[in-house]
Image (cartoon, rainbow, N blue to C red):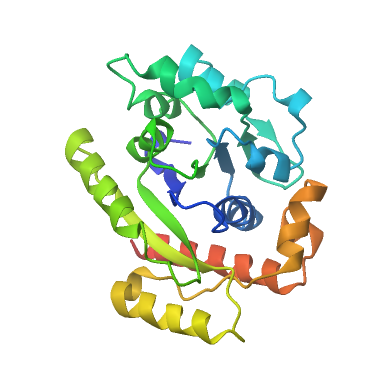
Amino acid sequence: MSVKTKRIVSIANQKGGVGKTTTAINMAAAIAQKGNKTLLIDLDPQGNASTGLGILPDDRDVTTYDVLVDGADVNDAAIKTDVRNLSILPATTDLSSADVQMMKDSDRLSRLGKALRSVEGFKYIFIDCPPSLNLLTLNAFAASDSVLVPLQSEFYALEGLSQLMLTVKEVRETMGSSLFIDGVVLTMFDRRNKLAQHVESDVRGNLGELVYETIIPRSVRLSEAPSYGETVLQYDATGLGAQAYLALGAEFLKRDKQR
């Protein structure tokens, strides 16, 4: 597959606990389920995306740390998951020291981008970023075509979003890239909660069509699935969470086709 056909999307929000990794895992699975060869890159030192896809720590022989710091080949490091068409580049806690290792290098912002140039066979690459705007996240942004932002339906939902958008602008200017905000996805939504409804109205009023129509509900099944090393599409295929991520994947593909 030509490098030019790859779509690279960072899934990011510097605020933790907003369903970022849950969205990364299940959206990647939904896209893969549509027949698209998909790679999920775990760029969070916590390694939750790796765990959530059933990759045990002992099986993470080559990781994102090795790719960023030692120049390991992504094609060799990617591990096939139990989800058809979905592979993952796993992470371990070693990744937490990558910032320091790369800090003095002149190419510190472009390490991941350079590594992904040689990646073959994937139509979509999603990057699960750490919950902070650090050097790892900047590497992801510099390597990506766009950024998808999970946004929890709570009072402080928009807090920090302006900083993330400013960072996207700075990456565009510094790296000369065409990085853009792919969209905002409302997560952990409880329709019975009037505050959640108010937040939705506020976010849509401020961001308009940037906000995806699909809303991810608050769901116990979504929380349980990673502990079994499964996506919610595997764990509870007919549940509200699984159906929401399938809808999100379909909406993403529709938007992508329109572009």
